[in-house]
Image 1: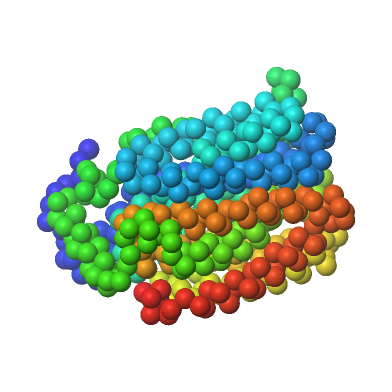
Image 2 (image 1 turned 30 degrees about the vertical axis):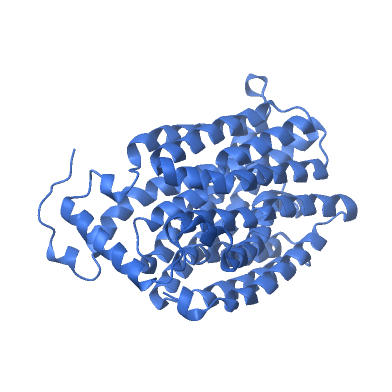
Length: 437
């Protein structure tokens, strides 16, 4: 049913149209958040499957680490092309395509029996998912002005930590409750059942997501005019923003952003993919209990995302809102290597690290659109994500290799901490007047 096209209330026209943006948020963000939750769950549930899969298939830690990491090779190779296609064909069709194909491929992981098959399906899953995150981030810049994006991106991206808050206990329960049903192992049921939401959400995208605010049937003509006025004013404030493909790709600031996000994801993926193993090594064997404990660092991530995103918008400050969380994350990862046999302290250290690193993500993704727009923004978001997601291959491969060679992952976590400290100070190299708006 079409919304009433009455004259908007006075509150809609005052204080930067809060009622208008509240309406847009409720129409877009919950759905996109659920999509991201499904995407990230399909990306990291291999960390839970590992608890049974490695023994069943006789895979080494190195095989697992390489397979988990190969996801990011496909992701990196196709991320920029995917975002450019999204800009041309529209968000509705392209995001639906991404979600349906990644759901199918994630479900097919249940059929692997050899390392080669595992490598291939993980690579294809990355290629299928490529472009979802930068595509949505670019899409949101066409709906919200710069000064609102930190909070909005945080609301969207809480799907990332929520995937562990919900997915951790759920994954542990599936692997325990369904093990042996219909002759399938628990890890096979895990891949099968958790692929279904992605496919269903992909189909719903055709009805739930308008390509642009101009095509949103639930906005009145006057609301669209108010939104256009806000976005045009924001473009004028960022009058030095670049707009071409070259401006987005051959831009030192974008490559700097890629380095910062690379450091964030080194730590975040170490926690996301290996947290179940850390908890088991600390003495917990029941998969459901492991799932509950993995949710704790992710709850901290949700809280810090919302807090840091809102704080960054309120103060119109981006650099220190990146620098300090990266330093705190480095401390948390380093401290975890000295308490790996203590369950409480292990969970505490990774909770601190997860809260800081995941909390910094919406602040980070508020930065590209402060100096890029149009095709340059689409390219810049995708390039920064591509560079950063090399961390997925590096993080998982180094964690697996370090574990096989030394019996612990400490050396890898120390390296990740050094990267975080370096990039914490790199964040301060951005011109304050350019990004703090």
